[in-house]
Length: 251
Image (tube, rainbow, N blue to C red; front, side):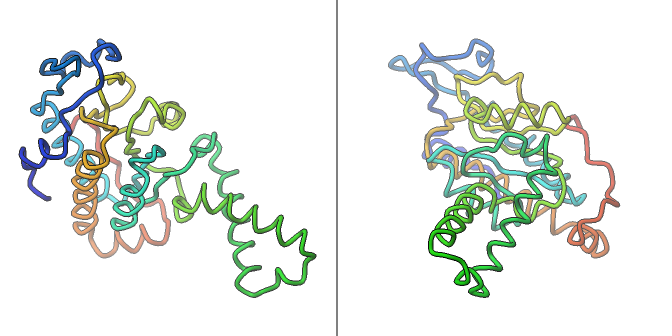
């Protein structure tokens, strides 16, 4: 795993919270102080949360578990798409569709429809339709691709969610909690840490801050995947469910 460097955290502005007037009192243990009406996050707590999250994600990845990265805010989208793709994990950077987890069977149906539309486009069969229908099918394809392309290879429910800003992604967090799926989250001073299993206190609005934290987490995922035995890797690739139990957060 990449070493956590305090200077990198400070340079990325991870320690800058929201205005003091917007804080959530439950974040008090993670706040170092206040400067110019801005809360300053205790980087010791940031590092502690990041270390715990990295250890947990490494274990999940090593045991063949899926980790879904979620961040639909503009500052998070590009970094999550790039880094999650690099470690071959699903991601959601556009609008979170209600039922993505709790109604996963329907989501899989929509993904099959995406594959059908792609076949029409690749084989040029779409030209057999009227121009009006071609336009309608193209709009349908663009909409499904935009919303679901990041999870198209997610053949089963994930064992863990990595979320940037649980306030914004409250629907994703709610679905995960209702299904017992663990949530790792980058949380700012306006968030409720009780809603997630592994909070990482830090700036969730800065592009550099988000990228730094997600980069560390993805590095742990890649290391965990590299630790899988060959047979376990084959089962994971096949979408089988002969996996060992996913570790407890408290391990």
